[in-house]
Length: 432
Image 1 (cartoon, helix red, strand yellow):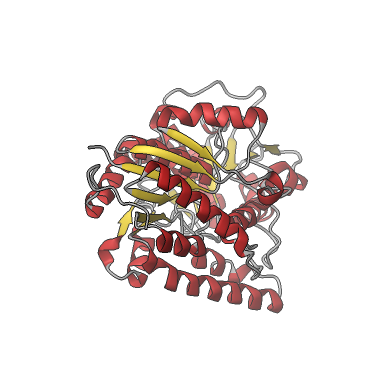
Image 2 (spheres, helix red, strand yellow; image 1 turned 120 degrees about the vertical axis):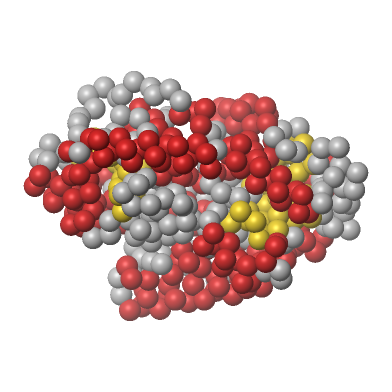
């Protein structure tokens, strides 16, 4: 019999704008191929946004269970500007750098999950993408006898601590170190709670293996792309200027000591330190900064030769016609859907080492990797001027993405997890 999965997520919206939203969407698509899927959204949506989201995701599941909590309990003003803190509040009950924990929020989330599990009797409760709430994991594992899978989209402590070199004061450094210590401690006691913890790369799998009760409880469940969405390239935006350099991501104003999110740091580093060097060789190079709240967070970077678009219905008209896609990330964790998206589109890429971390890509085979402003700029120049090289890299990456980072590949990774859990429709776990 087909196993039943209750997939619960702190955030569910369509269209999916941003890497973590695409990660949720593709996880749902993959799990729907291997199980009878129930989706529990702990998000708060109303009106047309709710209707659009429900209409889209209903095709992949048996039922969608929406949160019974109210907007005042859940929604926070300016989510897109503070996406990380929003997710952290939603899943851990506190801001990224706020140690206060209103237990009522986590308790309410757990109560809903337990109630729904009692109705649908899942074989597996799958805690989907988002900043991991180990407090929620602890409650769910204590109150049900269901198998529990915790899906990690990165190592949160590493994400915090990787920003340490960019802290703007000694006080900021101390606060980042303290936050990293808190996250390390949560990961230490929280990882053993789950029956399975998933990771998006071998690097992060090794980290979780060191914390898990047994190495075999840690499984590969990567970021992927739905290749069907990238087969046809839409028309380019009116007036697109070439050579087109493309930088995309989700932006927010970070109230942490770092003074900026990874994408804000990347965009400012690109405009202030890299782009002037590019324009010494290619004066007409035009940078497009695309993504949710990019206009609010880095709108001041707009000017001659730089366009800041804000949120778009789809990035594909830009990405599909870009001469070079840029991934100039200097801190953060996880693997980059933006690299997989560019690969699916056949767009050549320049990335920092960190931006490409965790993906089986090689410099000068799938993309160019550079970390200094001078090397990053020269790599861009190479891809704009050496089109045979650009095509070679793009085609190699496209083949890699198709072979290893499709929804089909993710579904197979999900099957491996269910096999490990020995989940069948005949022995569904019951509530304790």
